Image 1 (cartoon, rainbow, N blue to C red):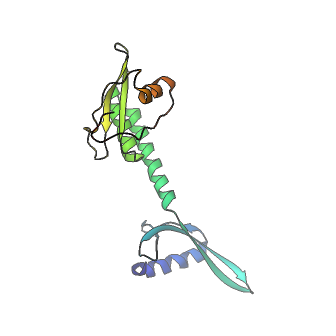
Image 2: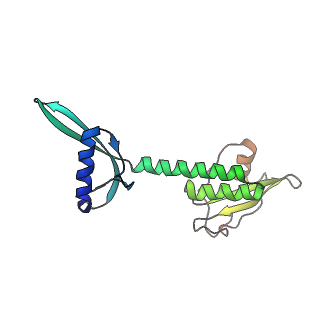
Image 3: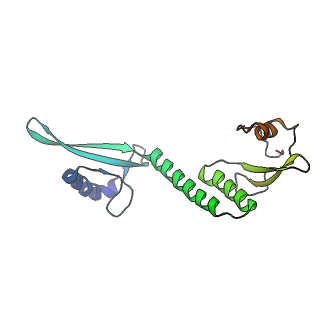
Length: 171
């Protein structure tokens, strides 16, 4: 980006001296590259000096690290969530932490937890988080052997994904 040209010149000059990969400026701020549309993309820079025709040639490689940074943020979020799960003392606190992790860390828009009621032989909803962060969507109900998707996942232990959830309907 043009407004950061001097900082980039200094960073590039430092790279020539020690030939290491850099992701951030000395102040810790992210290095970016401006795209043709003006978007800022986080990058890392690797600078190497090579000999070419008996003269030193400075070669810089710029790599988009958007996906890697997103992965790192998700991993840090999962690490934090695991710590909070470890500290949870009740099933309710565990339920809330699992839902929080699914919706915020893993960016799953709708997550719900059912627990098995061994007296009545059904799964009872205990926690839900919707896309807007509320606990009111959709109307959750008990699930038994007639509820194929949910019950089959419970009985077999295999993950099922059901994208057929109407906002005004129930799960």
